[in-house]
Length: 239
Image (cartoon, rainbow, N blue to C red; front, top):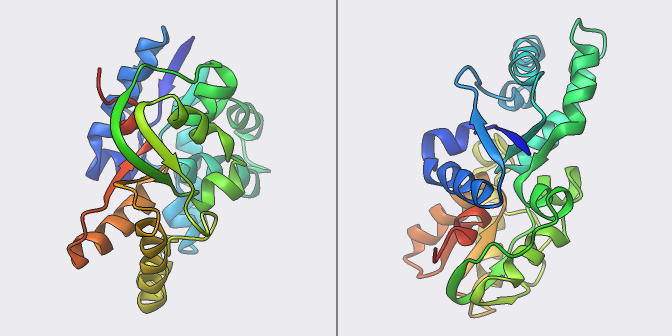
């Protein structure tokens, strides 16, 4: 399969290794992976901040950048969920309406692409230890992703996966929510971390690096040993 890689802002600026690891995994499955260097943002930050006209121009550029792709894969349910669920609202009567509809059917978050499209669950990863998984709001509610990450993690050699209490509860990031309502955001992160620590897990894994940034910041501020990892980085371990 021919894959166009979409690297979201968080990954590009803060966690580029996750993008490299995704290429590594996809190529191991036999996919041909390419990267369009013209790509920018999906438009979500501007949209969420209320700048819909500015967001619309960014979204139209995204559609144009990826209109010829066979499949688009991203390590971010947040961006994929935004494209699938909100591009219709912004671009319904635009000149790229038809292209937008086609694009929404061929963009996938990494774990759902692996499990539901490629039908691959075991990539030969090894990571010794105990992990728990956090369901990000975007993965769970916007992309309907629940079992896919767990299936992939269940095949990681040496990894024991344990469920966290209140796994479907938000980590407190929510984009600008973390800035506008900082005390509430921190309290939500602390609750998530306390639940993770209660499992005695060494790793807290999720699909969204925005969640990881939120949780990891709180973990480091408290001097805790719990380690956050993106699902992609877990699957790239040990080979």
